[in-house]
Length: 202
Image 1 (cartoon, one colour):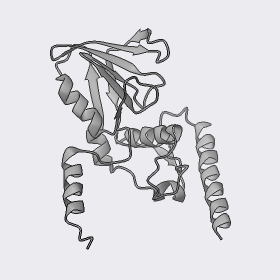
Image 2 (cartoon, helix red, strand yellow; image 1 turned 90 degrees about the horizontal axis):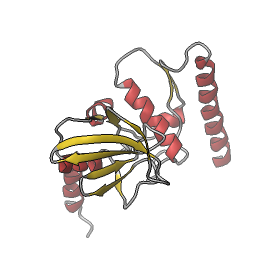
Image 3 (cartoon, one colour; image 1 turned 90 degrees about the vertical axis):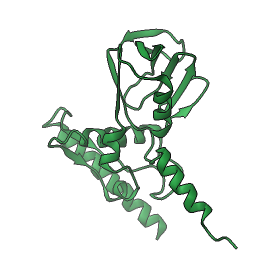
Image 4 (cartoon, one colour; image 1 turned 180 degrees about the horizontal axis):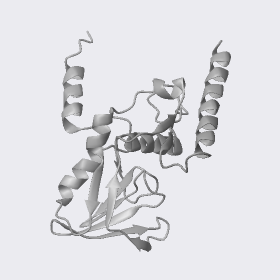
């Protein structure tokens, strides 16, 4: 029975991808999106793979623009809990060169959006801090980007290669998507901790 269920889920996921490919024949992708099934069980604590998470969050971010879209998906994809549209909309943060944005507030925002602090970024969802320099590997880009602060002002924004650390382009602005399908805002985590503390385990 388990094997049959897995076979059905695989067929459903493949059907969604075929439907998405067919839609691209009529639309170049500007109004068509794929919301793929996770490659982990629906209620497993293990997150989906990097590419699956990128596609799921990209579709959620596109839906926040409130314009007509075709979204190809499957029952298996919809079974996995995700972020509500309002939380995704509130979570998308735009950073612009030259604007005033306190660095520490931005770092707190990254943590709330599910980014992991590392010594150096190597995968989507990582960020690193060295003084007034913050490196972010967002889900919306194939390369990480670097913001340099001068006081509370963002002095520079650049895309760079993670292997060589060399800049390959300059940015005027960048949008930061949530990096996890989890609500990690401070008030939500605090409320969850209070509920755990209130559990009777005796």
